[in-house]
Image (tube, rainbow, N blue to C red; front, side, top):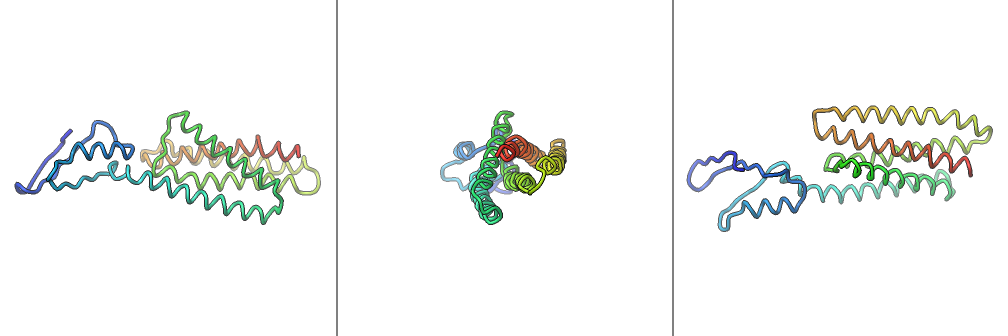
Length: 207
């Protein structure tokens, strides 16, 4: 739909166009470009959603690189800390379960990832490792394991619930970017907390 069109002379003009549906990917952007382009006429098409369609693949690539670098750094640090393969494997499996559950929940509720809310992934990776480290270190201390469990489980649960509530409160924000980031962070931290309590803790206790 052509909303506005104005020109200073017969050789140069500007127009505001509203597409039938919001541009969400590169294919839609290219289709709009082909529909608007006139052969032999010099045109420059721009707009927030139009440009954002090109940034989404770029953001996905950068997210992959950043997440890979963070995971590698975590593996190196945890290997230096534990110097055993068992605890390291438990943490990495728990982290994989958390990320997988987070993506599954977002897909289940039809929540799409975009350029902004993907920033939650590095945060979720860090939180997932932190909760696992607290549990592993507490339960591996010499002495009464039941007392160590009682000492660490409440702070971890309270920290997780507080973080979920804090990020979840952004779901009522008027800014769509903040709202999406808060929802993804809250879901990711909830998955990390669930994985810590129901995977790491039983695995270490039974081990």
